Length: 335
Image (cartoon, rainbow, N blue to C red; front, side, top):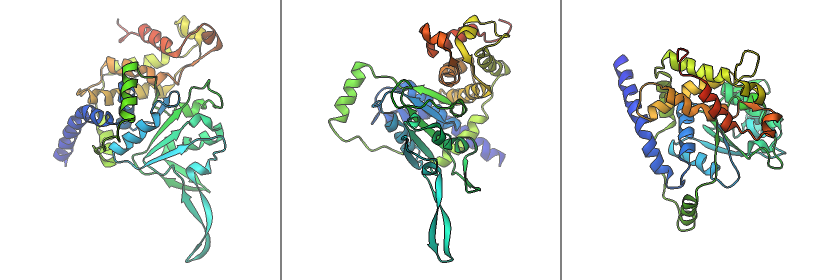
């Protein structure tokens, strides 16, 4: 049994390290550019984490998530979040039905019962409905009428949102934001890539996608990712980055105390390390480096650091703040 386990882990490491090119080739049939976005979504999938995708309408956020689900042969459900959406529209509800045993209440599953959920424009619905995802994202089950229903594995929530300054949006509560592994920003493409998109989408039907892995493969990959070794110095580095983002009398970084209302919690360092493991495997490495932590600091911290009005008045953006934060935190205390 131990030999078989070792052989699978070795196979899984090889498969994960080669997955970037294979998945990239398939995604290129329908998605042009956005390489950083694709890498972060792959890391989230391999780590078993949820992902928040932020960007203006029309940037292929929905298409990208749907394509990923198809590549991994996952049951996919898209939920369009609107101001009148209710929690039962997501989780499901009990209805009265005629059965062989007479009339009785029967639970009808909602769209949450899938492997990959696309919560489209999640910040278009009020917080009460947004909160319906909290239990599912954290516990991987939902409770209705006092009965707990377990969700199928693997289970991911990929939520898209429009920039919060757009009309008709509701900022997500901090408790829900913290459950997303990454906040990935999708920006407009360079001109040449945008020309390619227009040419490709107006000329012919896209080529059919080839399934690369299955949901069962992903579950096993999650186990392999968890086993990737991490040096204590690297773990401490991730913890110090998260701690350095929190304002307070013990923080010697004046720019954090001046510009930040609330810093990152424990999940930030956990996700930097876990994501670093998946990123290492994607790059053909079997250990996590300081560079892996730095590369994932922005998508992990982007939605966990709350800047104040002074920062906004001075034109400070979260990307610049995280960059300055990384420059202020040393890789080891002795340096």
